[in-house]
Amino acid sequence: MKKFLKLTKINLYTFFDIHKIINARGFKEVKKVLPMLLLYIFSFGFLAFVIYKGVTFTLDGLIALNMPYIILVTVMIIVSTYSAIMTVFKINKTLFNAKDYTFLLSLPIKKSIIISSKIFNLYIINFVFGAMLLIPTYIAYIVKVDVDIWFHIMYLITFVLIPVIPTIIGSIIGTLFTAIISKFKYKNSFDILISIAFIFIIYYLSYKVQSMSSADLANISNFIVDKFNNIYPLTKVYLNIIKENSIFDLIFFIIISIGLYQLFKFGLVKFFDNINSKLSEVTIINKYREKDVKVSSKLYALYKKEIKRYFSSSLYVMNTAIGCIMLLLVLGAFAIFGGDTINKLLEIPELSNYLVFYGPLVFGVFCVISCTTNSSISLEGKNLWILKSLPINIKDIFISKIMVNLTILFPTILIASIMLAFISHLNVIQYLILLFTPVMYALFISGCGLLINLFFPDFNWTNEVKVIKQSIAVLASLAVGMLVAMAPLFIRIDINKTLYSFLVGVIVLFLTIILYYILFNKGKRIFKSL
Image (cartoon, rainbow, N blue to C red; front, side):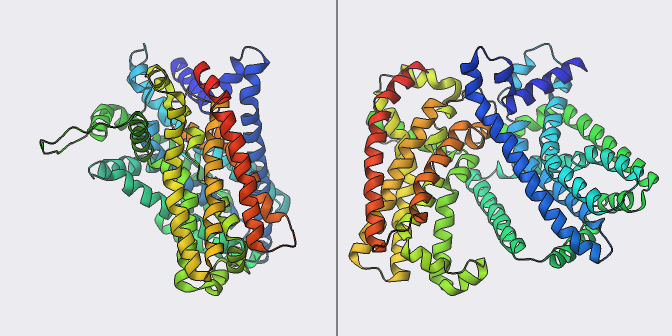
């Protein structure tokens, strides 16, 4: 048990960067991590406040229908569904194909403890998310509704157990999903398409929820609970616990959660090596053909390495290409359905007119969202020394990483500009500016992300999720990019919109020149010292 707890603690410390503060030597090391931890705390707090307000709003409708308990069951369903879905996407990198598994096996720790710790880590991560929803819901509920002491006890017990079974279900589905797509030749493309579909479903639902009244949300919550009673049997059990204070259902909830967890852990430990080897095996079918050997320049060879690394990770692609995908889909919808239809669908008045008037600046916003360079140095990990030891100019290394980002952004800008020119009937000058300003933004964010990543690298990661989504460099580059891209949209100057977009593009050009001067001088020195 001691080894299990210690291993779990180490994994959690690493995931949340707590170990860097505990083991920090001096304030300089603490200063590097503290902003990220404070950002976590602020984000969790802000999200909890938003959820509290949303639950309070929905409760008003449910109290009018005399069934306030429905909100508790609805949030339980949301937490369970999210935990299962996130586990599906995390299971392959966290449990199977984990980079630290071989190292941990070399230590005097039983395989069963290592696997149990990894399963428990998945549960803890889902529990943290669940707490962000369940705690504000609990506070809003006891403020609005009179409850007895038994409610508090039962809610606390179920609060701990809610993510258990969804984590198990997500692990099983994720394992089967990984096993199936691993047989496909283009498995990363398949994974990316599923992720895109999931993201846009979430966006669509969030838009619809914003326009609903408390009565609408109350009716939807009741509908969700009715449907999930048939899909997820524990929904009805949880409803009886919350509504009736049923001790029998509480005991059943505890036994089924702990029992299934132990059964899943036993089965996984027993068959882990066999499953892991099947999931990680690669079948290559290739016919040898005699052909001339091609020689590439150093820069092109680096670029091919970087682009292959980029497309080998569906998470990397999804987290950096989402802005480009959204821009093309929105413009495609405008071209097919017309501006008025999209305005009504998204419930954003004058969206089409705003896109036409400020097209180049809006393109710039989507460009800064899609940045691959803000984690490209960190993703080298412990292999950075190999890159540094090669007889290659550091400037070429930087350019190759920037070229990957431009490979994503330049075609998007070109296609989007043609689509907008077709929709809005732009003249030649307007079209050229529609190309010029976003291109400046693309060059700016590519260099900005790389420079920030040089200042805030993170090489001590075991899961790429940490550097692609949760690192200081990613958040800082996004903040800087959004500031540069959004500020011109809020500044009101009484001049021609086309001229204004051109002037903004010129300003971004000057910023880009200064940025690249710093990158190719100070950035080189930082890279050498890493």
